[in-house]
Length: 153
Image 1 (cartoon, rainbow, N blue to C red):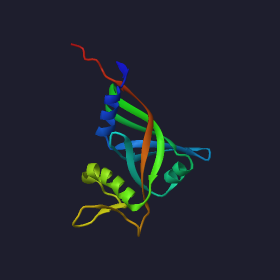
Image 2: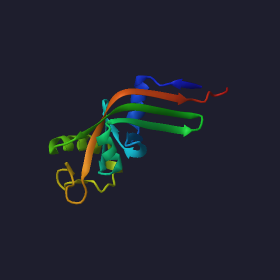
Image 3: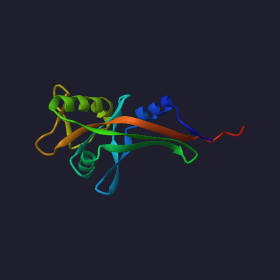
Image 4: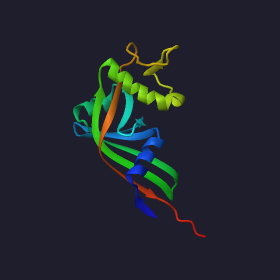
């Protein structure tokens, strides 16, 4: 059976996953790339080094974001949302965004752009080696679909 996800089901998919794909468009080129993210109930939060994705989103703030949960080919859920890129600038704003990310991803993180202070476990942007960009996606529209195999008794 195919169907549409409710808002509650869409939120559940977004909360339950940490890997999605972001699509951006600028200068006649579409770019889709996987990102690690956190959904806080309102925004998609992520961080990245400066590069093609960040440069494209700075030029065109409209983005698309997609997340899948696949059990098998007959049992899956997929969420697509459209929104606007918002770069968090200023140390306090970046650290607040990083805190949201870290609270969920600490057990999984192995990144060159983030680190913890030994004592306080307070997230910091590493300024010396890489420029870490903390950003969020303001969700403007979303949809979700699913397929669920009906069990024969």
